[in-house]
Length: 314
Image (cartoon, rainbow, N blue to C red; front, side):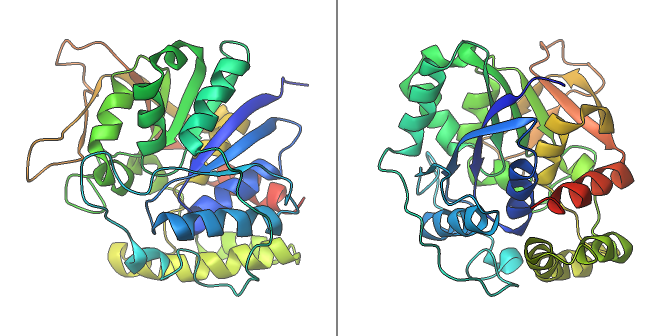
């Protein structure tokens, strides 16, 4: 059996974030979730914290450690995406308010304390939203950077352009200053851009297989996906919407589903037109040193088989 990886999930749920968290909790043999940290992103922090706890309880994990982090980006006004995710961020399914409580420690301090406590190279960070919490942790405690095994992040785009502006993907656009800090930190980064996630479409036959599981978590996920995809179907004209965030967890479980290459990635923070753009040197023309493994292709059917099989375990 492969080793069990220790992970921290930093997230702004979001229906696709919820699917990622479900995938992680459904895979306890491979992943040990040390804690989950909420950040403002898809919706304000009060909702992302609530949504995170709703998902933990849906997965039968009211014991999970949940921490609240940054309420706003490092240097910019807050941008949210209720137009995609609904008022609460988890519209589409009726669920009870969570009863589990948030831990008292701030998410940034939890990240720092955990990385200092665990052996060097033991903890993988999984970011599903803006990179604010991680950037603040790196600013406050630069000593943690070499202790991080890997950062697997959903964010950015290159060949696919952006999804919130023509040039920028939402997670990076919301807090490009944070992304700039993270990409300059020397942490080993695996980047799941829109180039990959736009291939992971919630097509009717794929969602039908999740529905056929017949469990409550599966049905809730199907309801969330039905709500979430309506915006993307209209926007992209596709059968189903792209399921972005679970790509991060799927990569940890089955890296062979993905392929990409080592690239230099710089974050644009100054331009009006392209703020938040991830400038990926795919063709290695800049002479700049590679700082991320940028994924470009994915076995979408294999991804949905994995997601469906694991959600069935919850």
